[in-house]
Image (cartoon, rainbow, N blue to C red; front, side, top):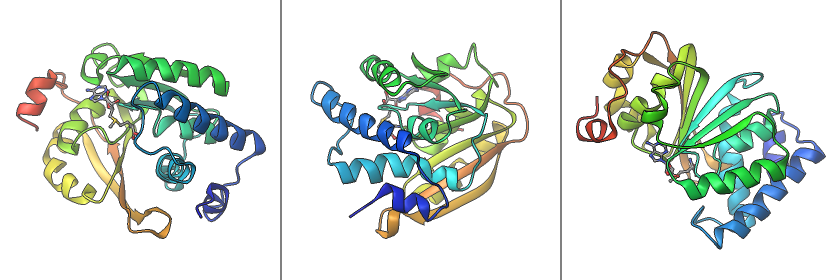
Length: 232
Ligand code: SAM
């Protein structure tokens, strides 16, 4: 039986009673709203705590989010940025998702959890980049697109010296090889590939930390059609 408190204690992270209540409220709202709209295929309590909440937090084992600003591209029902915000109350979160219904859910969730400095915006990352280039300390994404597409959606949003944190499944290393050239073009450099399995099962993950070493050339991101047709 998966216990998030126990799993996080192994990483020397102790959740407060308030944080545990926030996760409980998040779970209840996710399941309730999922009956009205498609938010997640996983609805059992253990599955949500492990494959959504805990999985979103694994990147915090290798990265300090204190006082940072983060943009979460394609957060859907809020992963990974809402669990990270619960863990790091000082985090400033901007979510950009192209599905309006999910943004509506997030607005209700943000209010119910009492989160400040969390903005959920309905839009596409490549459009959002036009007004918010190199504006965030961190960009993150989980389960949105292959890395050779995702890099162009995310890296333009990151400040030079910031990081692009990618949560990938078992194909993470392969996807990186395919995207490596494009990541260099966009101003990124891989600094860490954390390979692990989720809580000891055979669910393989790669958390990639890509540092922004130089500015992204102004011509990126291109329109989504061009990105998809000819990834860098
Ligand atoms: N990150 C969440 C997770 O890990 O559960 C949600 C993943 S869901 C499979 C992918 C989300 O990405 C969808 O909500 C979709 O609307 C959004 N998305 C896809 N392309 C996008 C883009 N170019 N800009 C913003 N959101 C996008």
